[in-house]
Image 1: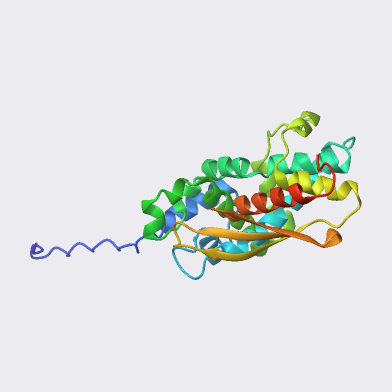
Image 2 (image 1 turned 180 degrees about the horizontal axis):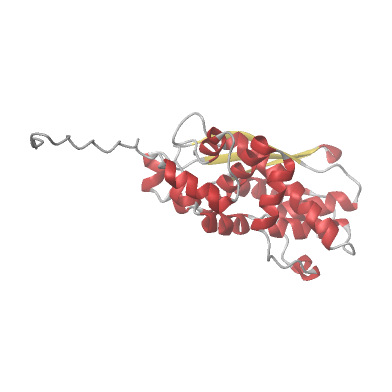
Length: 249
């Protein structure tokens, strides 16, 4: 054991960080990259907490951020692509907010470095999993909305998507199942399908989502399984498409 020399103060021990907890300076740097200074830092902390780390996790913020992101991108497309009909606008929006797009922006912000995960998720590479990073990105957007309101989160989202080329050609991008189903319903003036999580099973680092897609107008519902909420929703939508009368394309 080291003993301090007479007359010299004993050096202070460096504070220990709890396992999985991002240092305060890392969160500050993240806020700077994000371009938003949180009045309530706890919202940011929660947005960057996966359910495997603790009970105060980011899934509710993810739900809110998904809606806010969709509204902001919808508004941008509506104003920038005024010649496109509703179905093609929906497809363009799906292209911009798809998992790969949000994953790319999560990496640019450095979310893997500040995302709080349980040990099991860390060991299985959760900090680099596209679905997990896309979910965290949405949660952060939800946190900004609660912290400072719509105009603040709108400004952040538009800046993060700045430089993304908006072209009518995005309508030619291949449709995913959810987009195809939405367009089918809109073309027939039906209400849009509803998605709900039926069950989440498995360990925190290897969860399986069971999602039901309901189409009240047709009294039709199907379920899908996936390793993330998004993939399960796509699976359920694909099952509904197969059950639709006529050609869903």
